[in-house]
Amino acid sequence: MTTHDSSPLDLKLAALETAARLGEGRVTEEALASARQVVERARERRRLSADHTVVGFFGATGSGKSSLFNAVTGHPLARAAATRPTTSEPLAAVWGADGSEPLLDWLEVSHRHQLDGPAAGVEPSGPWSRLLGQRWTRKNGRQSDGQHGRTNGRQNDQPGGLILLDLPDFDSIAVRHREIVTRLAGQVDVLVWVVDPQKYADAALHREFLEPLAAHRGVTLVVLNQIDRLAEADVEAVTASLKGILAQDGLARVPVYPASATTGAGVEPLRSAIAEVAQRRSAASERLLSDVRTAAKALGAEDAGGVPAGVGKADEARLVDALTKAAGVTTVVRAVQRSYRLEGGRRTGWPMVRWATRLRQDPLRRLGLRRGDVPQRGMNRVSASAADDPRLHRSSLPERSPAQRAQADGAIRAFAEVTGAGAPDAWRSSIRRAARSHADTLPDELDQAITSTDLGAGKGSWWWHVVNALQWIALAAAVAGLAWLGVLALAGYFQFEMPPAPDVEGFPIPTLLVFGGLAFGLLLALLMAPLVRLVARNRARRARRRLRAAVSVVARERIAEPVTAEIERYGAFREALAAASGRH
Image (tube, rainbow, N blue to C red):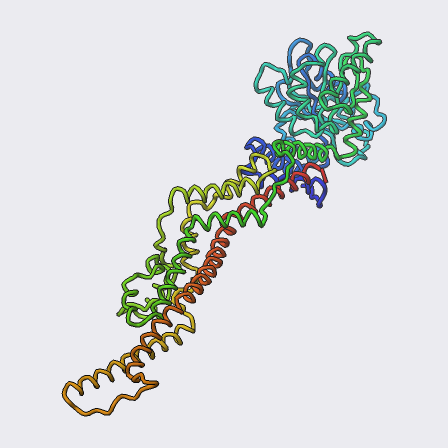
């Protein structure tokens, strides 16, 4: 196993894996599966021998692929025929066998030939000789012949190795052959496409293989084989035509090698190109980088490049306003105002008529929102505290009307649309889902927010006590005056001599006490009524602010934050795609 430090490929693989994870449920399953497959395949390839370069020969029936494979290796390893496909299983020619077995097992290539040098008649010069050495053995259950089994004692001075694969025809009528070609086209490090002068423009080749693999142009070679069938003057014209078609496939810079497996023309340049790629020992990484870029492009295929508007303060404020109305806050605020007025009237009104106000039920108590009620007889302090805990009960607010529910739903949809504007359709859908992720529990949570808010119920004003004391003093004065007058009247009735009642400016004090006490109490009640209404409005405004703040917390935690998290997820997805595709 070869270990790797952090490298561009490691970073891009990690970014692609992150993008696939973030895109779950938002990107097509086909693109996600492709990305996961690329990550898994890349890790497996890197776990295996990084010292070997795998080169696959791909071609159609009759292109002379196997013959070219034999010419390049210098050994008659592959069975060749002119009229029908003869390669039914992948066949490998291996130089530098050490460490190649697990790699070939992963490639599912069972037919293997281990070679240490070119065959007789192949000139061991240039990079090919340095790469291949001077001895070879054949390993497929048979022994090597004596000529090729000898060694001159020289060892391969180039670390690593090379694996050439001869593959079945991609246009074979056998489905299994096509499956093998498709699988290995996604696994080999270098792709050598062999075409012939008659079918080099075949639509199946270009549409199904070359175009989808255009991102792999850095590890792609194209061979125009069988040039011996062309007049010498036509070779250049056909080569130029092939290059033009490749450019339309996105492979404008891919090298094209005119060659003939029959005459050997052009084989040495192709052999040198393959040897050069193997010497660099970077083809596997280049291939995997191309796979990552292709997978990243597929993940971002539906990404129009827009940036969501995000959650703004104004957007959140509109959402909170709508939820405040839908939660029945207006009803609660009115109840707070009426409750204060009712209690204020009881505390500051004329004592003689206060009994009438006690017939009216407190609006907050009717809604189950009044705190601090006196515990029922027999209820201990723990039970009383539990009964007063707003988290343990619901309010008695009226059931939300269809109009209120529609208003809340519309506000949530509008919030999702505004904040997700600019994102691709799939991500806008996920933002809408995030906004409604707590829709089922939202009514209960809003009700909980209302019951948990301190509305100031049961808290009077300090001046109530002063006014109440004055009222009772005035009533006491009136009662005392009446009692005094009653005593005087009773004494006169029974003919008792009583001293006359003192007077002030001719008005008897008992009479002044009666009328003065009654007048003062009534006047004080009349004067306090506007003050009670004014303070009730202030209490209502304070309650509205507190309730709105409580609703705002629910809106933020249950709607705004999931939407923000989804938008941030989209941003992280785009960043991961950019890192994987190499845009930065």
